[in-house]
Image: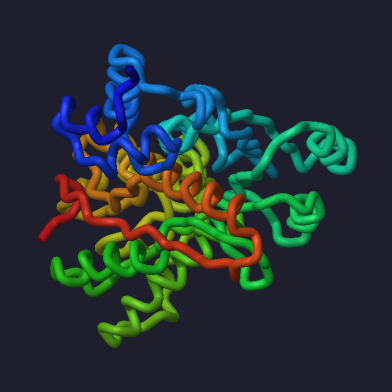
Length: 337
């Protein structure tokens, strides 16, 4: 005689709701718990015939990673963690994950046709480098769609992204509260949505403290370590810029490159110049001094995007929503208080 779901829950000392969610392939259950329940269900003879094989995928989620220039969307810890979260989210929800890349410098029409030939149930688009004029290529597929890591007011779809305004505001506010009146901005020279929103947060903090927003301490740097280093070194040596007491950087890579250039030109960090980054990449612990930065829950961001897409697959008629995930300060040694 087969065991019931209620009896299975009692044997495993789990709630009936948890066991039901696993057996019905619902998201929100850890992979460890899911595997434990399924293993016990087979051991005790649970009848899967009415629900089908719980290990069979409910469908396919297509992850598209859009690359315009690859300066930001690269093989970094940020995107490795983001993709890992997406993968975990798909496994929890019982969906198979397929990954493809789109390149702005190649034939977009041909790439979209190739994508349209695939069989999948929902599209997750990493739009970090996406320009809004390219969005119609993906919305035209008429599939459930969630855009991850960017947002445009014109997009008629769900979006899941970092609360960039909040993160930049908190970072800049932290520098000001630490006693710095001349707070500069190491701004990405590549225009993407996330960085534009971080600029909004930076200037919002200055206005809140009634500090001037028209100042000479905004420097445009390439959003990579080597690029930011070369750009900052040129500004310091050739243009002899006046430096601020402290800088907020659009990401950790920019902060790390600028730190190297500043130290090479004789500045002490943080005694002469304080720095704060954004993303909390592992290298922050290994810089000298260790970099204070805004921590982004990268895996959670990926899992949340999958959860929203799974919801969208079954409820296509609902109005789209925008979900922003908060950041938090990770204090280290690069800010003088």
